[in-house]
Each structure stands twice: as C-alpha cells, then as structure tokens.
Amino acid sequence: MSAPRLMPTAAAARGRCIELGGEALHTFRFAAPLNVAYEYFLDIPAVFRLLPDALDVRAYGPDRYRLTVGATDGHGHSMCAVFDLRASLEPGRAIRVVPADDGPPIALDGMVFSGALAAEALFRPERGGTTIEYAVAIEMSIPIPGVLRLMPMSFLQSLGEHAMEYKMTQMINGFTRAITADFAEWVQS
Image 1: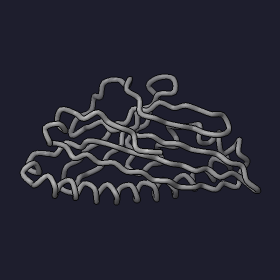
Image 2: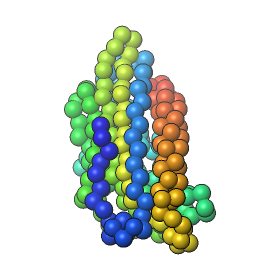
Image 3: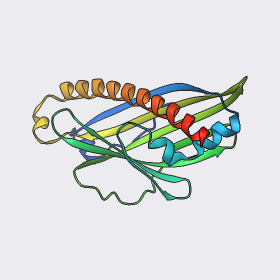
C-alpha cells in the first residue's frame, strides 16, 4: 500500500506547512477462526479508538468515519489531525479504509489540520487461528505555528520527519498492544 496523496493546501503552497507521511505494517495472529477475527475488525470506530492519541472516531454516514488524532509538537503547541475515511469490505477477506472528501465541516478549536489515511486489513485462515496483515499509510500538511516560522524550513522538515518516524513507531506499537488485549477481552465477552 502506498501513502494516500493530499492536494497541497494554500498554506503548503506558500511554504508554511511541513509535509509529512509514514507507513507501517503489522501482522496479527489470533487464535480464533477467521469469521470471528473479521467480525471484530468490522467495528471500525472501536478498532481506530485503540490508536494512541485517538481523540474521537465517529460515523458521519454509511461506511464513512471521521478520526481525530491529537498530539503536541514538543514545543508546547497542541494540535489535532482530522482524517475523513471511507470503508470498503471484501467479506471474510479484506477491510479497506481510504481517504474520503465528503466529511462534514471541521468545528474544532486550536491548530487543526486535515490529513489522508489509508488502511488495509487482509485476513488469512491458518491452522489454529487467523493471520491479519494490517497496513496503514498517513500523509498530512502540518501548519507551522507562530514563532517556529522563523526557523529554517530544512530544519523544521527534518525535525518533522524524525518526529513522524517516532510517532508512527509509537502508534503501531501502542495499537498492537491495545488491539491484542482488546481482542482477547472481546472474544471472552
């Protein structure tokens, strides 16, 4: 899976944004039949709520979701990224989530920006359970806050890329731990 493509914003065109992206892949192995694992992943809001720093996930239409992820930039600035998503299903085989462009207006205060997120879960039965290959790709244009605009763009871009690499690792590791524990609890209930 390749990262989704964003249209440059007006701020990005003027060089007042940092363009960042990342991809991650993780393989889950659950000691449960494929239909049980697939049913668990069908609850897209519940699965995305397990992402570290997920502030909100809600449906805004059939197979449409808005994911809001919060973060700080390490310099005391809080921000959040908003991802509008469209889900498509291949029953028993795959769940795909791609960027949607039909989300409702964003009504949040503070530094808020849109991003593009694509995710794919591929399901395979295997002896004693199910293997799920989960891939995610993210792209975003992050506006540069106030005084940071005085710093060289090359420095800010490099800083942003290192922060994104760290954040993607933290997110996939946290997501892996959370989904493994949540699935075990969900199966028991």
